[in-house]
Length: 98
Image (cartoon, rainbow, N blue to C red):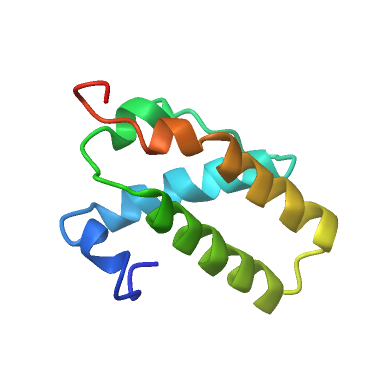
C-alpha cells in the first residue's frame, strides 16, 4: 500500500516499523492467530486519516492481491478480508462524527 499512488500518501509520515507490527498483529488475529492485536482501537487510530470508501476498496483489493500472491488459502484470505470489511465504518469515521 505504501508504494500505491492512491494510498501511499497516507503513509508519508507514518512510523512504518510500528505500523507493520500493528497491521501484522491485526491481520494474524483476523486469520485466527496466534498473534493478537492490542494497539489503539481501529476507529481512534484512524480518525485523523481522511479515507473514502474508494480508499478502503483499494486497500482491500491490494490486500487480496497480496494474499493471492503468497498462496494464502482461500478460507484464510476470506477471513482476513472480512475482518477489514467489518471495520469499514470505523475506518471512515471523522473526528467531528460526520
